[in-house]
Length: 388
Image (cartoon, rainbow, N blue to C red; front, side, top):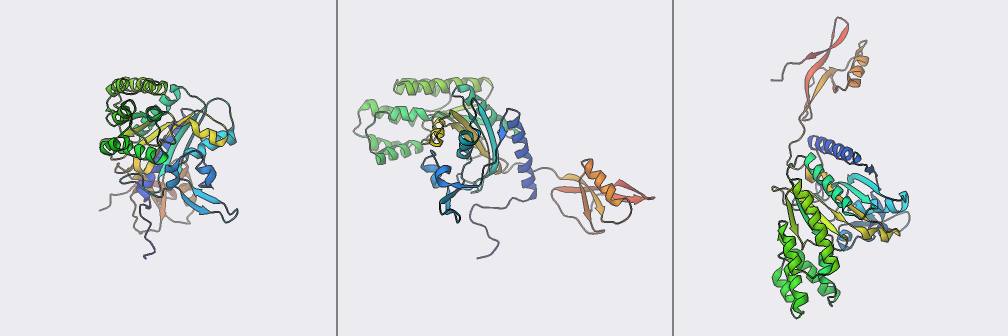
């Protein structure tokens, strides 16, 4: 095997794309800080018991595992930083009231999560703990929308759903774990034929709402249709009320809102409203998030929680990279005043690139439009003639 080949869906990030990602990382973290979110940097590896606590099978299958040579215990290479933030909130900070945390670092997946996705995303995310009201959900969704817009996606569409709906519809259903798992898979795929087969023999009062979920997607009017065909259970009605309120607020702000009540992403993880942000030219979501109140209990401190995350590498894919930055060329010299002149330029914010005289310069990130020269014993910056 050629030594420089990388595993499938792992890749290097070259200078111009890396500069674009880094600028966006700093922009998004500053934006989160302006809302009161505090930066945390969890470790890349954790004991797998802690890393996957309360997250469900989906995240476990995405997590690389290895044996710790010190303790002999199984470690997990994080596939999502959300559980780590929840652990920090529950055990290290242990604050009362609302806590806002943000993070941005690499995670690793055993399998790519999208059509073009890398297996090493650069995950940016925010998490809000301690408030169960819709105000927290709305804040997180608006922060996600603004974050995507800061990355150049001016009109993302917001997709809304709620994990409580499927739970409410399936409540009271007598079915074994294998059959229930098959139903959930058929619902997520909107495989009506398979779902009809799995629900054959159920009373119509149970079967019809399950089948109806596959058709409840579209604009906000779907919520009114759902009230007519889904059970009148409190859990279902409360979820519909919350979705209706959030959809109305976003629509009033001019955001396109889409509803998909059979969205089962993170079914074993999320506990309430879930959402995704989409662009017409992208097959995968730009950002995903939602409420996950139950994960804190696995850390011994049950806390209301909601948040979102996105992959910076995916977000900037196919977007224009940063323009080359103007720089000053300087030829290494031991003449008096040279070192102090270079230092003074850099202290003023200039990029100074030192090279041997007459050596060509190749870069996509910088353009040498000026040069540092010595004239009459003084070091001065002069314009350079464009390269021919």
